[in-house]
Length: 135
Image 1: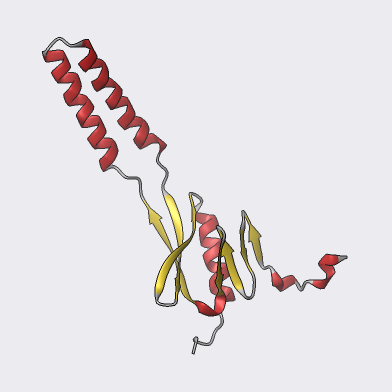
Image 2: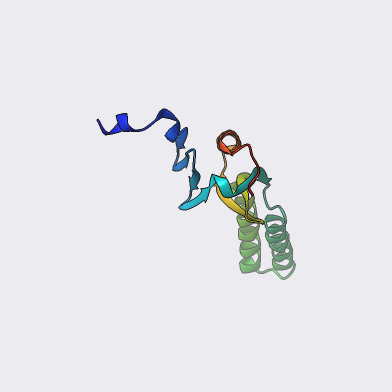
């Protein structure tokens, strides 16, 4: 059996296209050698509220101006923009990103709407990092 050649710690984490071995973190086509990782952190990115609000306000203004001038086209366009603003708000997700500190820079290694998953990856990487500082 081919699998019998691998030690159980060779792949302590392998889920959803992300793997952490005793040597590297591999996620989204990127490979981060553990010896070069200084630390990891999870960053939560909230919904963008300004874009949907701006679209909806423009829609309200357009609908009011269309109503004042008796323009059905202005009213319809305004209402459509209000709906687009609402859809923009409703379709956004709160995302969680795994930021890897490596070589004096920070890079995003993983992005997901599942906070528990990102936290598990971060903890696995922390557990796999060498205990001695990089020389």
